[in-house]
Image 1 (cartoon, rainbow, N blue to C red):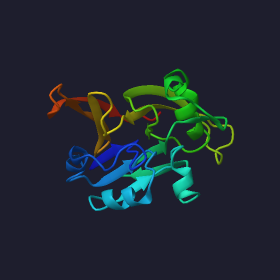
Image 2: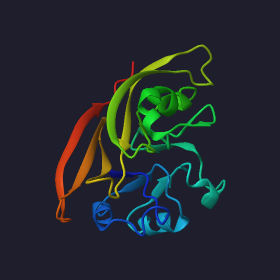
Image 3: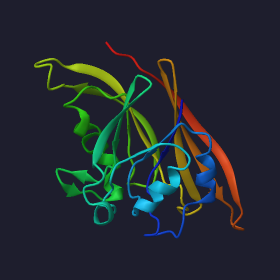
Image 4: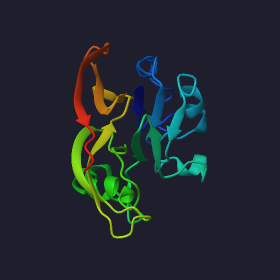
Length: 209
């Protein structure tokens, strides 16, 4: 299964329309996860033409979506549990993009620790791509006193719209018991010609004790 992961499209808040390269990158995927700062509902309708979409609200979405989108959610697919959150809040306080990485565990992972374990959390907000694994201790509410340790992949796809001379989107591949994550990087030359520059990927295997 191939899942596209995108975030921070900001249309039409900062950009007039979705990038053609991003839309091309959605072709052939089985599922799309949007990690927030969508801005207008029409954008979800547009990308839903490629595949089913799950989304969470970012800080810029609240005036447009109200309570129609959750701030966090868990998607279960192919035997994996994927958490989704925008990553802009800590104790209901807004966190600046520049502060996110230093607080990443508290902002992105802790909101999921009092439920069944997740294998991955996808998020956005910073506009910067990131793949990093953390060991987490989960305490599901229906298993009193039981702790469950598990490695969790934190995955920020960056933004697929122009960010300086860089834009990115992500993919998650699910095959048997293996989760593989990939960041697709687009670069912009000084002459304004677009080119796909490189891909970064890691393999992430679920190991439950």
